Length: 107
Image (cartoon, rainbow, N blue to C red):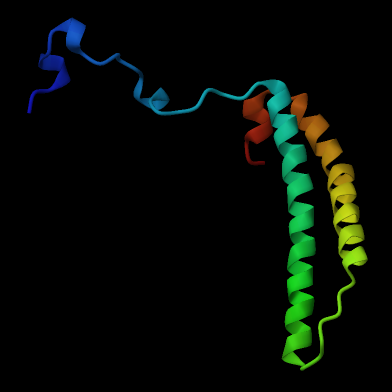
């Protein structure tokens, strides 16, 4: 098998520093804040779904019927999304003021 360094220059693959090969471009400032807010809004309804499954499982384990009104499920989801927005706005605004590298770095 022929190595790329043995090929003529016009046939060699573009040389890219190893640290950058295969990596996505870094995010811009607004994208990091948006990412934080989306994570918060998506995770809160996931908690509602887990709560509903836990309620149904608990009721089934005790032989009770799982009675969950549909209106309440909608209200729970709406409250969860509102909670996610309220809880996610401050970290999102704070993260959007930092450089992407600082915002995504673990403390």
